[in-house]
Length: 153
Image (tube, rainbow, N blue to C red; front, side):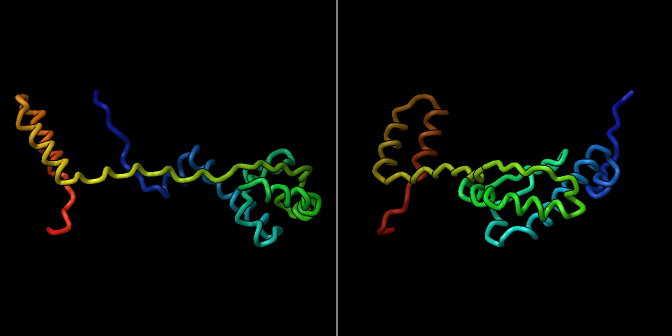
């Protein structure tokens, strides 16, 4: 008996039919709706710094990008809790928690090695001429070809 993989299905079909993916997709949609409701109650400058992380058992967890915005929002916590509690989606809201989580910076790309000067390439070529191992000699010759063009070329 041989293994036969199930036929490929479109991503939209998977999201509709696969139970774990469907639940995850519904949870993401719910968080997005809660985010929109939250943003309707925040000042425009604060919207980019505040994300809904979870909403469970009357507790709303918000992730804030930096401490300064977390402090500002803590001062507005009572007002925000009252206004959000009046909305059907946040019925039963008893507390708001703030967690400061700075955005993760993009990983720096390793800098490309600078091209060799022509004198360095000449030194590598002369070293390659004295090498008896053909693979090592070939590698050194390839390395010597990575020279930067001189200004008079």
